[in-house]
Length: 513
Ligand code: ADP
Image (cartoon, rainbow, N blue to C red):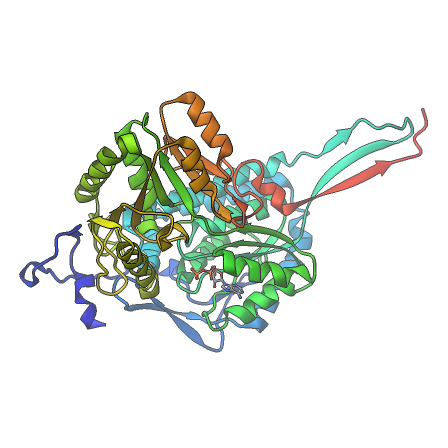
């Protein structure tokens, strides 16, 4: 991959094309405590090799950083069986003991934060500052659910009969299959697994093929924390083996629940598979977030919100703003300041360079998609205010477009990349109609200083999450999840643990007065 030499250069400022003389070549190496770089599957408390391996690549350079066991359906079945066996003892462990173990796991994540962040940077391309932030966020779910474990209260309900008592008891559902994406290689696992383990469930995790190392490092720390064998299992596999592994995880009768984060298309495939055995399902799927800026907005606040919401992880999060709706009166100043903020704050480069704010996209296909949306918009009359170019490998210039209309592809499908398309609107009704004209609804953002307008818009937005004068929202204390085809269920908050619990009605009859 030496032709991708630009990717090995030191960080470069946005929109400054480097002359060859300025290109500083730099080799980046993954330097992490050996015990955290695990490459085998983790099943029933054992590290086990599969018959073959698959490569993990640094998306910034295309270079191989590890070879990981390529599990198939047999390994997946073994993991399900181990999780099922472990469930019978794990559910008997007291909530307090489960809480203590989750807390130990949290402490170990904090202790190894830097190494865990490096793994994220090298396997996903995420800038190191953001990777550190992800580890803090990821660990926060262990912290939060270690506390929630002890608050799984049932109910005693007033009975209509004098000789009966009504008890509603919450119990863990059983084995949960957890299938996660590459854009948050650590946090998407703990957001699910911490809730599951707190509830008394056991899990089998299938991480994304691009980012198995973070998942396996989590398993190593779970083991060090004393989480019993079979409670937390990880079966990494290649894209080729994914359908057969996925089939076991979504159809095996011993699995009670599937929890998935990823694309809407894949979520539908998994739901269909899970239907035959009527499994419980939590689905956190794609978004198409509107970011609405009204005339009364504080423009600097809106620009700060847009920078965070759009360019975090190079635009590769499901809550990233995808369509920027800006009212006529504030439109020009917003676009102008947005361009200036992009010039000042965005720097492309390898994620391990501390100056980098924009790493590569996960692969060349992802960058091609963004480039295609840009050329489609430009052909239909959009104007490129900043960026616009497809760079080497999977790098893409952060791009600001104006004069965008709802006929353009970038306003009709999720971009998952650093493209900020601005649509001008005149009235609140018009903006809401555009914002809600989507079959998905995960996050939406509203910038305004008019309190009545904020309430109207926030209530009318057809999304599961609303940011009001704020672009970065995720936290374990709050719910995460969408409406429409953005998914089913909620993660995080006091509700997240409910996804792993059944309510049993116990009727105590025949009581004598
Ligand atoms: P992307 O296209 O960005 O990889 P996906 O939604 O396809 O998004 O991937 C999210 C996760 O879903 C990954 O772990 C991926 O391996 C997994 N996945 C994709 N297809 C299947 C499948 N048929 N069965 C199980 N998991 C799948």
